[in-house]
Length: 193
Ligand SMILES: C[S@@+](CC[C@H](N)C(=O)[O-])C[C@H]1O[C@@H](n2cnc3c(N)ncnc32)[C@H](O)[C@@H]1O
Image 1 (cartoon, rainbow, N blue to C red):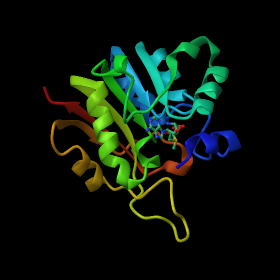
Image 2: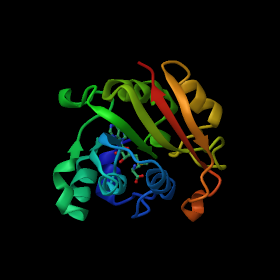
Image 3: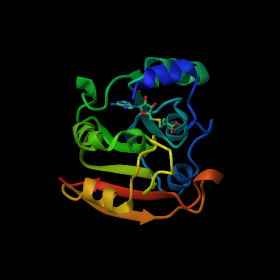
């Protein structure tokens, strides 16, 4: 995927223009503190949400235009949006985060890149830290659809973090964007020490 090209063309079909309702609900119910990373942050709505809930949050995205647009949308948080590759994160991000907030980064990646995603989480999240995920569950593509989002099931999620993480929370959220009802799963994983 050429993410930069997609942003340049303005074809950001996934962008809802507002923070994820399940992520919002999770943060309202769980007082969390510390440094947070939002990988593949796009326009940064979840970064804004995280900061509003007291987290010292950074959004990372591989597409410079996506980051420029996030900065333009949220100029007061501009320094929190960083261009970079989760698969090869900047040195200062390695082991630096207490929490990673996942929202439609993983489901945008071709399945062949899932091991790189997992490695990117391992490189940035400290041991004992939390991976708070609103995972987009999409086991089958519609006819003619090639993705993204790519096929991803709950067993795929379980397999991706089968070692080195424990599940601390797992549920189908009742707060969702209309078009995603029943297709999201909140699963929170703790990285083992
Ligand atoms: C489907 S979009 C989701 C954007 C945002 N999370 C949202 O919910 O609106 C996936 C995002 O992941 C970013 N991305 C893809 N590969 C990446 C990588 N290796 N490192 C950082 N960001 C990446 C893309 O540029 C894109 O912004």
